[in-house]
Length: 137
Image 1: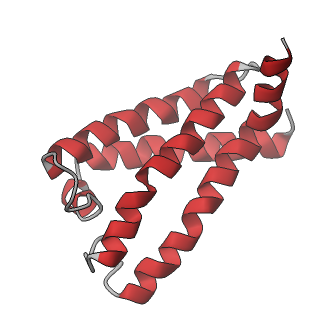
Image 2: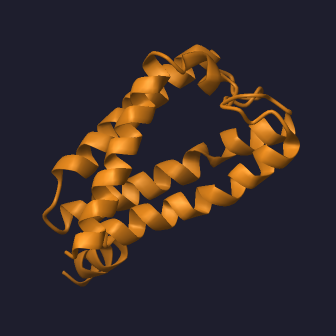
């Protein structure tokens, strides 16, 4: 585990914990803009539930350091980023403002960064190698 991986994992964990706290408090309304209109659940419920998940994932990134658990956490975080991507697409497609994303151009640029979050989660936790070693055993 190199220092870059450690720093990256800590930063991602802190960012997730902070974002999750925002879901529950100061940014709750902003996050509702990312809930697709086609989701058959109350937008506030989705924001609160995803906030709890983000806090848990953030805390896991901040506390789990031994492989293969560290890699599993990274893979779960990456899967979470994939799972919430439709919300980002919906924000773009439905022209919803939130977090200063008040133009289609800004919303489109944001979409380009979601894959980077997936790569960040996988790379800093060495998830792919950890999962491969689990398959061998």
